[in-house]
Image 1 (tube, rainbow, N blue to C red):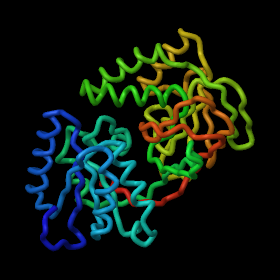
Image 2 (image 1 turned 90 degrees about the horizontal axis):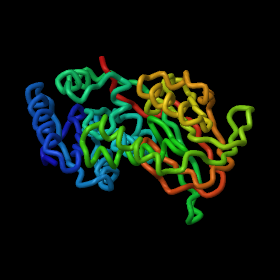
Image 3 (image 1 turned 60 degrees about the horizontal axis):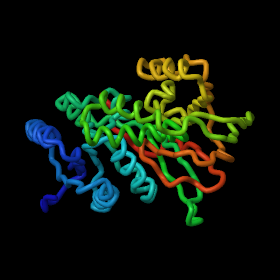
Length: 314
């Protein structure tokens, strides 16, 4: 990071390179060129790996940057949002978080209209500094060490098969590079994984006790599984997917890819401000596409309304 004295308008940028891809280095060179052309005052740091993101974002917050830009994907944004939620409210309220999409999965950026292949437009929008207060979802649980944990999310929590697929997709994307190819490979690998889980849920006043293939709780569009969710209405969208037959499963995957997931007859949508998971034995759990340790016992998912500042298109 540069040693020059920064003003309130100086950006703190965290660059999260795509692991092992030459294309990512070329993308950062392009981003730097556009920043310099626009006369943006900035300092930047680069993450060594996924584990270093929270440490570096915390450093940027503690050094007084009021505009923090993540050059990365959903996981890095998730880390940044959680760092902000760990800060005092007075600190959090003065910081605006922005994104230049450059990750294996960029669904939150895509929701707002940011495109990875249009750096000029993205930086112009960020320079306009249009701020929107956005919601975060939050999962609260106890881990196997009997520690009470929580994790905030911008997109969604997946429980069950989708969490397993998201993990496979992320691993495949880091190896293959192609978003489409990694999705296809993860679907093929899905054949070898468990397809449903015994769950007991409470959503609003409704209690559900049956075998469920996947549960998606979204503050945002949830990777296509909660397509009507928006991160600014104080509510969570929930999709409960019962175990369909093989033909129905294939049809559901097609509807997911084509953006019509809720049209499938095995998908049961809800809208609420809290979901209680009383039982979901052996089910994988992912937060914004990243697996967490399986919760022990019951746990809950809620929404925190308008808690961070996010830079959106002008």
